[in-house]
Image (cartoon, rainbow, N blue to C red):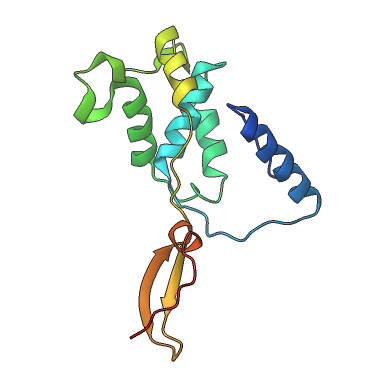
Length: 160
């Protein structure tokens, strides 16, 4: 069974959470193709664990691999993820601000109050608007357009 953790950061998100709860109770779930191997989400999850009670890499790896989206993650990708949070990876290792987690015993923790606060303030992912396919009425394919853009259009009479 899946669980959803919703952390509202302002009052409008409380309304969203209530709507989400009602939709789940009525089994109104939109179908979406899951994003496979979304490492930004994995890194945020690991950082959240590090900010809270820390985590054991082997235990969390089993949990992560049990999910649909990360079931095909390789050992190299897992090692890269941990390395990125501990040292900034190859590209950012010279900058101390990217040394976010520290291994203490067999658990990874965020030991910096500043890093923990920065994580709490910036948690989240950026999602793009839904894209709609545009076709000619005869069936030919034109392209795609963002739903937000098309929702702002209003009908107009065009004379030639």
